[in-house]
Image (cartoon, rainbow, N blue to C red):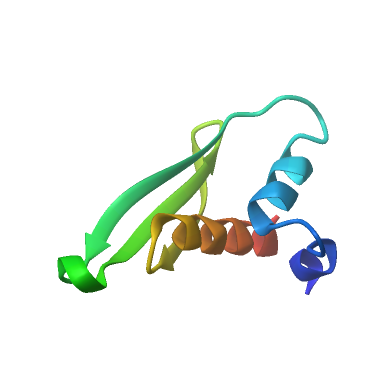
Length: 78
């Protein structure tokens, strides 16, 4: 609920970046930690971290969707 009210024209990755950078520059990274399934039907698992601390994990059918899910999950916990 908190995360989604900030997401209108912006995606979750943008909102997360803006929230984390409120107090200054931070290093946000998205890392594919696993790929599951056959090549024609892969699921990607991605961690999002801030300054080396993992905030959340997301899953998706492509890297972009997995990153978006990770950002969404991170927003729900900060």
